[in-house]
Image (cartoon, rainbow, N blue to C red; front, side, top):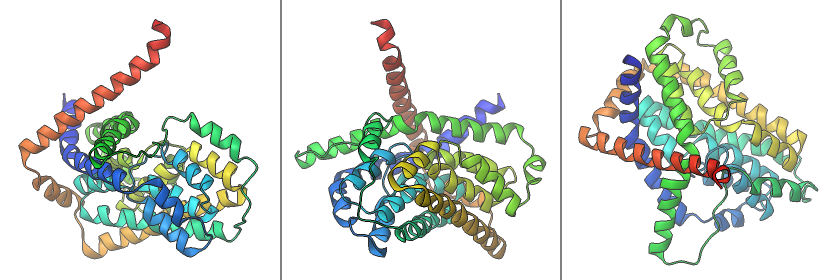
Amino acid sequence: MLLIENFIHLFVEAAPWLMLGLFVAGIMKVFVPSQLMAKHLGQPGLMSTVKAALFGAPLPLCSCGVIPAAVGLRRSGASKAATTSFLISTPETGVDSISISYAMLGPFMAVIRPIAAITSAIIAGILVGKDETSTIDNSANASSAQTEDSCCASTAPTKETFTEKLKAGLGFTFIDLVRDIAHWLLIGLVFAAVIKTYVPNEFLLQWGDGLLAFIVMALVGVPMYVCATASTPIAAGLLFSGVSPGAALVFMLVGPATNIATVGLVKKELGDRALAAYLSSVVGVAFAFGYLTNYLVDLWNMDFLAQAEQAHGMVYPPLAYASSILLAGLMVYVLAGKVRKMYAPVAA
Protein backbone atom coordinates (compact mmCIF):
# COMPACT_ATOMS: atom_id res chain seq x y z
CA MET A 1 0.00 0.00 0.00
CA LEU A 2 1.32 3.39 -1.01
CA LEU A 3 0.50 5.01 2.33
CA ILE A 4 2.52 2.45 4.28
CA GLU A 5 5.40 2.73 1.81
CA ASN A 6 5.48 6.51 2.20
CA PHE A 7 5.36 6.23 5.99
CA ILE A 8 8.26 3.77 6.07
CA HIS A 9 10.24 5.93 3.65
CA LEU A 10 9.77 9.02 5.83
CA PHE A 11 10.60 7.10 9.00
CA VAL A 12 13.83 5.71 7.58
CA GLU A 13 14.85 9.14 6.30
CA ALA A 14 14.29 10.83 9.65
CA ALA A 15 15.62 8.11 11.98
CA PRO A 16 19.42 8.60 11.75
CA TRP A 17 19.19 12.36 12.20
CA LEU A 18 16.75 12.02 15.06
CA MET A 19 18.99 9.47 16.78
CA LEU A 20 21.93 11.83 16.37
CA GLY A 21 19.94 14.66 17.91
CA LEU A 22 18.82 12.46 20.79
CA PHE A 23 22.41 11.41 21.49
CA VAL A 24 23.59 15.03 21.58
CA ALA A 25 20.62 15.87 23.79
CA GLY A 26 21.70 13.18 26.24
CA ILE A 27 25.23 14.56 26.39
CA MET A 28 23.83 18.05 27.04
CA LYS A 29 21.67 16.68 29.83
CA VAL A 30 24.89 15.65 31.58
CA PHE A 31 26.88 18.85 31.05
CA VAL A 32 24.15 21.52 31.41
CA PRO A 33 22.63 21.19 34.91
CA SER A 34 19.49 23.17 35.71
CA GLN A 35 21.23 24.88 38.66
CA LEU A 36 23.61 26.58 36.25
CA MET A 37 20.71 28.07 34.32
CA ALA A 38 18.96 29.32 37.43
CA LYS A 39 22.17 31.00 38.58
CA HIS A 40 22.41 33.13 35.43
CA LEU A 41 18.73 33.95 34.95
CA GLY A 42 17.78 35.64 38.22
CA GLN A 43 18.25 39.32 37.38
CA PRO A 44 15.68 41.21 35.29
CA GLY A 45 17.13 42.73 32.16
CA LEU A 46 18.27 42.02 28.64
CA MET A 47 21.23 39.79 29.51
CA SER A 48 19.20 37.26 31.50
CA THR A 49 16.59 37.22 28.72
CA VAL A 50 19.22 36.50 26.07
CA LYS A 51 20.89 33.88 28.25
CA ALA A 52 17.55 32.15 28.82
CA ALA A 53 16.89 32.00 25.08
CA LEU A 54 20.36 30.63 24.36
CA PHE A 55 20.21 28.17 27.25
CA GLY A 56 16.79 26.89 26.24
CA ALA A 57 17.27 26.62 22.48
CA PRO A 58 19.35 23.41 22.38
CA LEU A 59 17.75 21.66 25.36
CA PRO A 60 15.86 18.39 24.74
CA LEU A 61 12.54 19.38 26.32
CA CYS A 62 9.16 19.09 24.64
CA SER A 63 6.19 21.42 25.06
CA CYS A 64 5.14 19.49 28.16
CA GLY A 65 8.58 18.95 29.65
CA VAL A 66 9.43 22.64 29.53
CA ILE A 67 6.61 23.44 31.98
CA PRO A 68 8.09 21.92 35.16
CA ALA A 69 11.56 23.07 34.06
CA ALA A 70 10.33 26.65 33.68
CA VAL A 71 8.54 26.54 37.03
CA GLY A 72 11.73 25.23 38.60
CA LEU A 73 13.66 28.15 37.14
CA ARG A 74 11.05 30.60 38.38
CA ARG A 75 11.16 29.04 41.88
CA SER A 76 14.95 29.30 41.79
CA GLY A 77 14.74 33.04 41.24
CA ALA A 78 14.62 33.43 37.46
CA SER A 79 12.98 36.68 36.35
CA LYS A 80 9.67 36.83 34.51
CA ALA A 81 11.49 37.93 31.35
CA ALA A 82 13.96 35.05 31.53
CA THR A 83 11.22 32.53 32.29
CA THR A 84 9.21 33.72 29.29
CA SER A 85 12.25 33.58 27.04
CA PHE A 86 13.06 30.05 28.22
CA LEU A 87 9.45 28.92 27.73
CA ILE A 88 9.54 29.95 24.05
CA SER A 89 13.03 29.00 22.87
CA THR A 90 13.07 25.58 24.53
CA PRO A 91 10.04 23.92 22.86
CA GLU A 92 10.41 25.76 19.55
CA THR A 93 13.79 24.23 18.78
CA GLY A 94 16.43 21.81 20.07
CA VAL A 95 19.31 19.68 18.90
CA ASP A 96 16.94 16.84 17.99
CA SER A 97 14.52 19.05 16.03
CA ILE A 98 17.41 20.81 14.26
CA SER A 99 18.82 17.49 13.09
CA ILE A 100 15.48 16.21 11.84
CA SER A 101 14.85 19.61 10.17
CA TYR A 102 18.10 19.16 8.28
CA ALA A 103 17.06 15.66 7.25
CA MET A 104 13.52 16.43 6.13
CA LEU A 105 13.65 20.10 5.10
CA GLY A 106 17.28 20.80 4.25
CA PRO A 107 20.01 23.05 5.69
CA PHE A 108 18.21 26.37 5.20
CA MET A 109 15.30 25.44 7.48
CA ALA A 110 17.72 23.85 9.97
CA VAL A 111 19.43 27.25 10.28
CA ILE A 112 16.57 29.74 10.11
CA ARG A 113 14.33 27.79 12.49
CA PRO A 114 16.52 28.15 15.63
CA ILE A 115 17.35 31.77 14.69
CA ALA A 116 13.63 32.55 14.54
CA ALA A 117 12.99 30.71 17.81
CA ILE A 118 15.71 32.59 19.69
CA THR A 119 14.56 35.91 18.23
CA SER A 120 10.97 35.21 19.27
CA ALA A 121 12.09 34.29 22.80
CA ILE A 122 14.20 37.42 23.25
CA ILE A 123 11.48 39.76 21.99
CA ALA A 124 8.89 38.15 24.28
CA GLY A 125 11.25 38.43 27.23
CA ILE A 126 11.88 42.11 26.52
CA LEU A 127 8.14 42.80 26.34
CA VAL A 128 7.47 40.94 29.57
CA GLY A 129 10.48 42.57 31.21
CA LYS A 130 8.87 45.99 30.90
CA ASP A 131 6.41 44.95 33.60
CA GLU A 132 8.94 43.00 35.67
CA THR A 133 8.48 43.05 39.42
CA SER A 134 10.49 41.52 42.22
CA THR A 135 7.45 39.83 43.79
CA ILE A 136 6.58 36.22 42.94
CA ASP A 137 2.89 35.74 42.17
CA ASN A 138 0.64 34.37 44.94
CA SER A 139 -0.37 31.51 42.67
CA ALA A 140 3.16 30.07 42.73
CA ASN A 141 2.57 27.20 45.15
CA ALA A 142 -0.65 26.03 43.51
CA SER A 143 0.88 26.12 40.05
CA SER A 144 3.97 24.25 41.25
CA ALA A 145 1.81 21.54 42.78
CA GLN A 146 -0.10 21.11 39.53
CA THR A 147 3.01 20.85 37.43
CA GLU A 148 4.51 18.18 39.67
CA ASP A 149 1.85 15.81 38.33
CA SER A 150 2.35 16.77 34.68
CA CYS A 151 3.22 14.20 32.05
CA CYS A 152 6.86 15.25 31.97
CA ALA A 153 8.64 15.50 35.33
CA SER A 154 12.02 17.20 35.68
CA THR A 155 14.92 15.04 36.76
CA ALA A 156 16.56 15.89 40.08
CA PRO A 157 20.32 16.47 39.95
CA THR A 158 22.51 13.70 41.34
CA LYS A 159 25.93 13.47 42.99
CA GLU A 160 27.09 10.58 40.84
CA THR A 161 30.27 9.78 38.97
CA PHE A 162 30.76 10.89 35.40
CA THR A 163 29.94 7.39 34.08
CA GLU A 164 26.77 7.24 36.14
CA LYS A 165 25.76 10.73 35.02
CA LEU A 166 26.39 9.82 31.39
CA LYS A 167 24.30 6.68 31.76
CA ALA A 168 21.52 8.66 33.44
CA GLY A 169 21.64 11.36 30.76
CA LEU A 170 21.41 8.88 27.90
CA GLY A 171 18.70 7.01 29.78
CA PHE A 172 16.75 10.24 30.12
CA THR A 173 17.12 10.92 26.40
CA PHE A 174 16.50 7.50 24.90
CA ILE A 175 13.79 6.48 27.35
CA ASP A 176 12.15 9.53 28.94
CA LEU A 177 12.47 11.89 25.99
CA VAL A 178 11.48 9.23 23.46
CA ARG A 179 8.47 8.48 25.69
CA ASP A 180 7.48 12.16 25.56
CA ILE A 181 7.74 12.50 21.79
CA ALA A 182 6.94 8.98 20.50
CA HIS A 183 3.19 9.26 19.93
CA TRP A 184 3.45 12.80 18.59
CA LEU A 185 6.27 11.79 16.26
CA LEU A 186 4.12 8.94 14.96
CA ILE A 187 1.21 11.30 14.46
CA GLY A 188 3.47 13.71 12.59
CA LEU A 189 4.88 11.00 10.32
CA VAL A 190 1.44 9.54 9.63
CA PHE A 191 0.13 13.03 8.86
CA ALA A 192 3.02 13.66 6.48
CA ALA A 193 2.51 10.29 4.79
CA VAL A 194 -1.23 10.91 4.38
CA ILE A 195 -0.59 14.32 2.83
CA LYS A 196 2.06 12.91 0.52
CA THR A 197 -0.24 10.07 -0.54
CA TYR A 198 -3.70 11.58 -0.79
CA VAL A 199 -3.64 15.38 -0.76
CA PRO A 200 -3.18 17.03 -4.18
CA ASN A 201 -0.97 20.08 -4.40
CA GLU A 202 -3.83 22.19 -5.72
CA PHE A 203 -5.77 21.81 -2.45
CA LEU A 204 -3.04 23.33 -0.31
CA LEU A 205 -1.96 25.88 -2.89
CA GLN A 206 -5.33 27.63 -2.50
CA TRP A 207 -4.07 29.20 0.73
CA GLY A 208 -1.35 31.03 -1.17
CA ASP A 209 1.98 32.03 0.30
CA GLY A 210 1.14 35.24 2.13
CA LEU A 211 -0.77 36.44 5.16
CA LEU A 212 -3.76 34.12 4.70
CA ALA A 213 -1.52 31.05 4.65
CA PHE A 214 0.27 32.29 7.78
CA ILE A 215 -3.02 32.86 9.60
CA VAL A 216 -4.24 29.37 8.70
CA MET A 217 -1.01 27.80 9.97
CA ALA A 218 -1.17 29.85 13.19
CA LEU A 219 -4.81 28.89 13.81
CA VAL A 220 -3.86 25.25 13.38
CA GLY A 221 -0.73 25.55 15.50
CA VAL A 222 -1.89 27.63 18.49
CA PRO A 223 -4.22 25.06 20.13
CA MET A 224 -2.27 22.03 18.89
CA TYR A 225 -0.03 20.10 21.27
CA VAL A 226 2.97 19.10 19.19
CA CYS A 227 6.67 19.19 20.03
CA ALA A 228 9.30 20.71 17.75
CA THR A 229 10.52 17.31 16.60
CA ALA A 230 7.06 15.96 15.77
CA SER A 231 6.03 19.19 14.03
CA THR A 232 8.85 18.76 11.49
CA PRO A 233 7.42 15.86 9.45
CA ILE A 234 4.03 17.59 9.47
CA ALA A 235 5.65 20.75 8.11
CA ALA A 236 7.57 18.68 5.55
CA GLY A 237 4.33 17.11 4.34
CA LEU A 238 2.71 20.53 4.05
CA LEU A 239 5.74 22.03 2.31
CA PHE A 240 6.11 19.32 -0.31
CA SER A 241 2.37 19.42 -1.00
CA GLY A 242 2.28 23.09 -1.91
CA VAL A 243 2.31 25.18 1.28
CA SER A 244 4.93 27.94 1.12
CA PRO A 245 8.17 27.52 3.11
CA GLY A 246 7.28 30.58 5.18
CA ALA A 247 3.90 29.12 6.14
CA ALA A 248 5.54 25.81 7.07
CA LEU A 249 7.97 27.72 9.29
CA VAL A 250 5.07 29.55 10.97
CA PHE A 251 3.56 26.20 11.90
CA MET A 252 6.87 24.89 13.29
CA LEU A 253 7.31 27.99 15.45
CA VAL A 254 3.75 28.52 16.69
CA GLY A 255 2.72 24.89 17.26
CA PRO A 256 5.32 23.85 19.86
CA ALA A 257 5.24 27.11 21.83
CA THR A 258 1.52 27.76 22.26
CA ASN A 259 -0.25 24.65 23.53
CA ILE A 260 -2.96 25.08 26.15
CA ALA A 261 -0.79 23.89 29.05
CA THR A 262 1.93 26.46 28.35
CA VAL A 263 -0.59 29.26 27.89
CA GLY A 264 -2.15 28.36 31.26
CA LEU A 265 1.26 28.37 32.94
CA VAL A 266 2.16 31.80 31.56
CA LYS A 267 -1.17 33.23 32.74
CA LYS A 268 -0.84 31.83 36.27
CA GLU A 269 2.86 32.42 36.79
CA LEU A 270 3.43 35.67 34.93
CA GLY A 271 0.02 37.33 34.50
CA ASP A 272 -2.32 38.41 31.72
CA ARG A 273 -0.04 41.12 30.31
CA ALA A 274 2.81 38.64 30.06
CA LEU A 275 0.50 36.20 28.30
CA ALA A 276 -0.46 38.84 25.74
CA ALA A 277 3.22 39.64 25.15
CA TYR A 278 3.99 35.93 24.92
CA LEU A 279 1.38 35.15 22.27
CA SER A 280 1.92 38.32 20.26
CA SER A 281 5.67 37.81 20.09
CA VAL A 282 5.41 34.14 19.12
CA VAL A 283 2.89 34.79 16.34
CA GLY A 284 4.37 38.14 15.25
CA VAL A 285 7.94 36.87 14.96
CA ALA A 286 6.73 33.71 13.22
CA PHE A 287 4.94 35.83 10.61
CA ALA A 288 7.98 38.09 10.16
CA PHE A 289 10.31 35.14 9.63
CA GLY A 290 7.71 33.55 7.39
CA TYR A 291 7.86 36.55 5.07
CA LEU A 292 11.66 36.60 5.30
CA THR A 293 11.83 32.90 4.45
CA ASN A 294 9.61 33.26 1.40
CA TYR A 295 11.65 36.27 0.25
CA LEU A 296 14.97 34.44 0.59
CA VAL A 297 13.58 31.31 -1.06
CA ASP A 298 12.52 33.37 -4.09
CA LEU A 299 15.72 35.40 -4.08
CA TRP A 300 18.02 32.36 -3.98
CA ASN A 301 15.69 30.10 -5.99
CA MET A 302 15.85 27.31 -3.38
CA ASP A 303 14.69 23.78 -4.07
CA PHE A 304 13.76 22.22 -0.73
CA LEU A 305 13.21 18.79 -2.23
CA ALA A 306 16.74 18.81 -3.65
CA GLN A 307 18.15 20.02 -0.31
CA ALA A 308 16.40 17.24 1.57
CA GLU A 309 17.57 14.61 -0.93
CA GLN A 310 21.13 15.90 -0.51
CA ALA A 311 20.85 15.46 3.25
CA HIS A 312 19.50 11.94 2.79
CA GLY A 313 22.39 11.13 0.48
CA MET A 314 24.86 11.93 3.28
CA VAL A 315 23.59 8.94 5.28
CA TYR A 316 24.94 5.47 4.52
CA PRO A 317 21.81 3.36 3.73
CA PRO A 318 22.62 0.51 6.18
CA LEU A 319 23.08 3.15 8.90
CA ALA A 320 19.68 4.64 8.07
CA TYR A 321 17.98 1.24 8.33
CA ALA A 322 19.84 0.38 11.55
CA SER A 323 18.85 3.74 13.07
CA SER A 324 15.22 3.26 12.06
CA ILE A 325 15.15 -0.23 13.61
CA LEU A 326 16.70 1.09 16.84
CA LEU A 327 14.33 4.06 16.98
CA ALA A 328 11.33 1.84 16.26
CA GLY A 329 12.43 -0.52 19.04
CA LEU A 330 12.74 2.34 21.52
CA MET A 331 9.34 3.70 20.55
CA VAL A 332 7.67 0.29 20.89
CA TYR A 333 9.33 -0.17 24.29
CA VAL A 334 8.20 3.16 25.74
CA LEU A 335 4.71 3.00 24.24
CA ALA A 336 4.24 -0.53 25.58
CA GLY A 337 5.32 0.78 28.97
CA LYS A 338 2.66 3.48 28.77
CA VAL A 339 0.01 0.89 27.96
CA ARG A 340 1.10 -1.35 30.84
CA LYS A 341 1.02 1.58 33.23
CA MET A 342 -2.39 2.65 31.97
CA TYR A 343 -3.98 -0.75 32.61
CA ALA A 344 -2.00 -1.75 35.70
CA PRO A 345 -4.61 -0.43 38.21
CA VAL A 346 -7.38 -2.28 36.34
CA ALA A 347 -5.45 -5.54 36.38
CA ALA A 348 -4.80 -5.15 40.09
